[in-house]
Length: 552
Image (cartoon, rainbow, N blue to C red; front, side, top):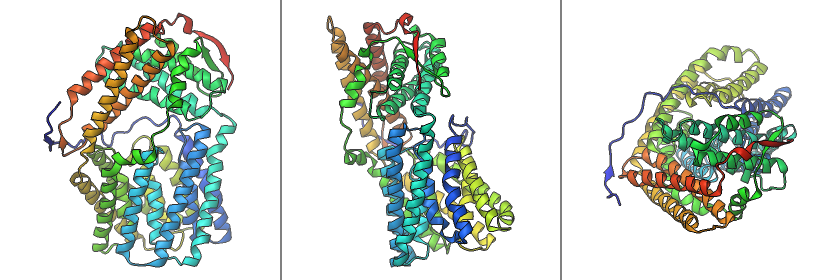
């Protein structure tokens, strides 16, 4: 085993941090959804002359940003939990604001809430935008003038807007009920086709293989999240993901055109191709469905260092802002909360993106403020435009989305009353710099030694899964169900190992990582996967041609 020696030197990347990527395949879905969720409540308040209440309805409306990659049965549950979490955080913040006006106490409460929101979002893998929106709403609410008597009404507004956001998020399912599963399956097919194109030997094939394995695992998680297998469309999609797994395990025997053709057929609302295959192919799915989920408390344990970083970083950023005399310390708090990623290297990248995006966003705010001040309706429309722009652009790079998020957040402060533009801009710039500097400094100081432990656990899981598959391969006639379940288990373990190793490799101040063991485990694991495919005879594509179609 590699000796435990501290690793103290890491290069912080600058090249590529601000590079724009390709937009998400569904960038328009969260963009249009948030506009549809925000517009009716805000326009209603505008008609009633009560735009000062828009902050509370925005709390519920912004929940429409979540769950767009999840199948609709899972999305319904996720959105409900996000809404309850958002409203619960808002209620706690408003009660605290009504009980004390001590800024230091409120910053402390906000930092603790930010830490809880961060670890719960990460543990439950709620997906983008993660904890940032929750922390933005709860932190801003801590500094809103409030009395205990007003709290129920304000919380009720947020809950009503959240219910509307739930309906907005679920509405596309009426037209395309299997859209998320189809997209996830198509992505898995395209990713494995890209890996198969390397024939397992071309330059960069390890990275391509890891991306394909992650895509296949994400497709399985999408299908497993539906909670049912009685639907013929979902069973057809499962057979396609099996084909993607086969291509991942045996790239040299893969028909690339067939994989890409299936992926194209999954676009839109057309028929889902059904491939020839026995139900034995899906026995691993049955086995995985039978495995109970890990308890939440066990998933929270490894996130303790991240919780400590978030709580301490947000608190110190808020205190520093107060010391500088800034009237809105929650901006510094939210900036710090938005930085924390899986490791220090990724946190650095997010810090650079946040600062650049916020500074440019402040300039955009100064440019559009005269237009927004023409009429309250113009203010509402500007906010809607920035809502759309933020979600349309943030998938290309975080800083680009922040260029729209920053003026939107600043304009929201104008709903209650017109404020001095120069003071707003100055305070936002100061809080951005303070939050980024203090937040990143805390990320460096608060170590995460558990990253190495997680690699050890992931390595153990891969080694056990590979040994189980190897034992079955040694048998003269292994049971098809057992062999398929072993292959699925090993595939999932390898995907988890790669994700864990990538996260740990960017962490600072920890013992040296067992890189050689990771590489060896991955190589042996993928060789075993290929052996199981050959044993099952699943690498023969002659019978895998499309035999019939299944309507969505």
